[in-house]
Length: 406
Ligand SMILES: C[S@@+](CC[C@H](N)C(=O)[O-])C[C@H]1O[C@@H](n2cnc3c(N)ncnc32)[C@H](O)[C@@H]1O
Ligand code: SF4
Image (cartoon, rainbow, N blue to C red; front, side, top):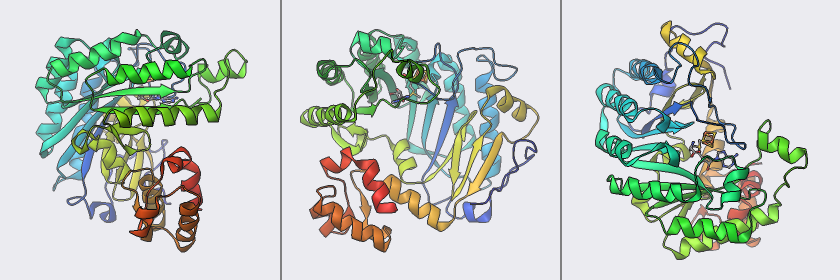
């Protein structure tokens, strides 16, 4: 991998895409990610690039942030132009995007439309914390062109939400999902976390039931990751909270898959279930297909045609760079064909559609045969030339992927 952008000390004035990255621009799906780095409080488990102060410096203050993100969008259009790719998905994530007024999010989307050609069926998602939306703000977002809302619910058990330091009541996420539907959102997702210390089987069953009683067409369920440096990690290392056992995590996943499947949701990525193809998150599919996206915002990552780059992490440094007419890119790497092939395998194996076996190396294909014998890959799909995880394989997805790509 070669660094092609100078490091932080020597910020690039302008940033040019190499011809190799530009090559597939017109024929590769293209998405925009906009990071909003604010949260009301930090949840004890979370290590996302987010800040609880709304006064982070000129251009990075919450009230000015939309304008700063728009400045980067303009740079993106200049850099990618003159033949701009058509935007097929926009994803506003965080942090908590809905801490910004709905008008600010609408202004960002309006600028996307002004700068780029946008597909007629563009998917526009915003993440939202349940306590930060109202029927009015959701109606404003829908009218502005947002098509999908992804709400962080995490659990329906009050004591689990307390361990996670969540601010909302168990019922608020379900209520917000109803409000989103009433505002005209056809696509609504709830995020769940399983394996929180103190969560019982019954708590998890109640969380799944609550999701199924709400009007959503998509569910993401993630095993709790104890991230180093978080309050949760400190509490566990002090012995205040127990670490969740891997067997419990596996049981919770099996329970989630069985419950969601019985209710008409199908898995399409190891941690994601949808009621049908139209309900899948196309933006995430674009990441998993290793397609092209530009990430706007502090710490945001981008990928265009094998060139990856990432922005400076702190919102103040990010805003300073843009105000000075400089790229906010901190560093980059150009992936060679072997790196890209490996990434495609790692991402593709987590999908319901799996991966053509001919993408694997000779060793990978031999190991795939053993994985079929071990019940980790589907025999029928394998006979048709694809590597697709079985139910058991999904539980051991990381290990299977390591084995097939070693
Ligand atoms: C960036 S958060 C954005 C949503 C919004 N801020 C919220 O929390 O409601 C996206 C999702 O990542 C998941 N997540 C964040 N940190 C996690 C962790 N340490 N382990 C498992 N899931 C995590 C949560 O389910 C969360 O809803
Ligand atoms: S609200 Fe979401 S992004 Fe913010 S700290 Fe909590 S999990 Fe992280």
